[in-house]
Image 1 (cartoon, helix red, strand yellow):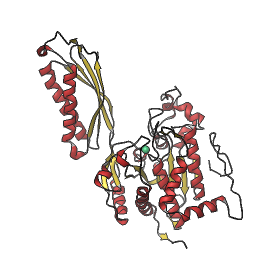
Image 2: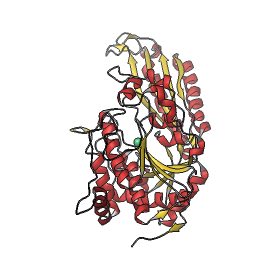
Image 3: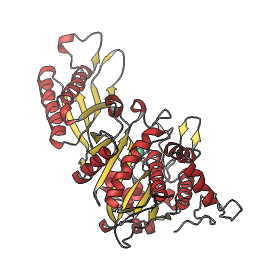
Image 4: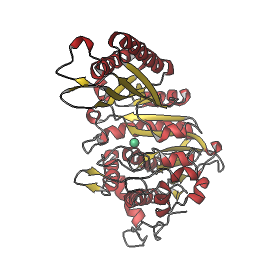
Length: 454
Ligand SMILES: [Zn+2]
């Protein structure tokens, strides 16, 4: 569907703006004039403020996947795009795709984008920052009257966060053929509403979901700009990071079985305490991950249950979950091997049983080397010294990487805080990110005839 400012285009969309001629020009002309009077930083802030006027709560931002808030923020995004002369359509999965034609009509698109949905009690920058950066990129190209060979697409992916349905990057999965219509039935939110129902209510029935799939030939490249959600940039005093890949999690459930017994009558030397053994294993996991520092592999025990959990009973059983992430498969495997070796020692020394269940073993995604080099060259052109980092979090870029050469750029997150109302990235840091993105997109899209306006 093509967004027309005069029409309601969406079941949830209540915003309807009229383009009316007035002595001061059309709304679009006034918008362009106003934006041109601003600097890059103010424009990005204006866009972000418009996005974050939707879903603001007393406890952060809340624009969950396939809710009215997400539809409304998509409508605001569409308005910005229409004002920047982009052709806007919403696909069958709810992704909003804004296109700027290039000289070569049938050529694959150079795409940029991120998402506008949030977690519960989320921040203002995760996803939204990347989409606002995309609008700023288009504004700059328009202002400089840049013509490109390849078309450029700016995409706001739907339902990136897993908070509502326990499934992440829904829109980009659908676009890349990784989400089938029948899969949408099994995921439910906390009220029991299935993803299928929620998508249907939002105007995206599962019967047409397949039409959202784009072929490999549709894209020349994809680049996502996102907040880092970690502290490496801040720690190293840098402004931009180029992701080398996306570190998929390997998750294990570890069960330590000992024997529950009376805490007062059981002497220390005959105890089979599951908790003291499990505690040793947790420290072993930390040490094993520490050995893999140079591969940037990380391991975390974030869930830990003690049974029966009574003051006067020696713990008979402990269950805990381990989350291991990294780009290097063998590095991740070495941590698992080391911990299994330690557990065998414990079984003999402490007479406990240790078992491991593999909950998930996802393959890390390595991002395109050429795109990384192109992003690095783009950084140098704007005097930015980039950091190369694996992404510990999943992003829409990981799905796009399955159909086209993909890059992922990070800008700093204040104290690494994310998925939290305190999440913050300074507007000037997005400006630097757009400076890099602009260089990269111009190169990828073949911006040969750059004419300065005025
Ligand atoms: Zn995000």
